[in-house]
Image 1 (cartoon, helix red, strand yellow):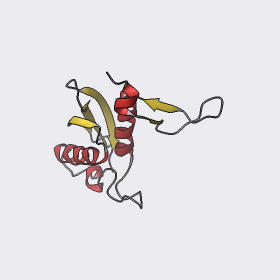
Image 2 (cartoon, one colour; image 1 turned 90 degrees about the vertical axis):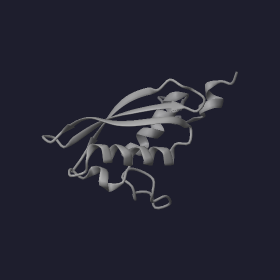
Image 3 (cartoon, one colour; image 1 turned 120 degrees about the horizontal axis):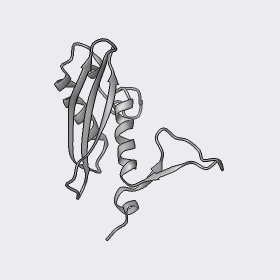
Image 4 (tube, helix red, strand yellow; image 1 turned 90 degrees about the horizontal axis):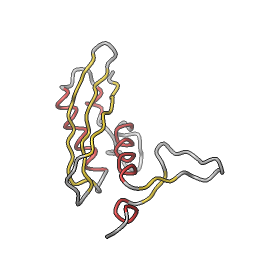
Length: 126
């Protein structure tokens, strides 16, 4: 059986940080995949010149956009950027007009696994 490092890879933490000794901190396993998803969720589409389609499309941040339309667009962005995911579900769970947030649940399973991991992520809309 392969180790988690073989299956998921190993990479820098997101956001990048250094250890007490000054080395770049590395992450491995499932947490590395979640950090890649979080990176997509934190990035507005068009902010990377070499990959202008990376990130969340501007439509998601519009207050007039349906929460389900936003969730669909977010799922497309994650699927495009993260090939290590076999199953993905993005569901809106709460919307607050007071502070302009839309909370989404991101359920994902790494390739070769059936159990979904779930995390909740707040999006701050305009």
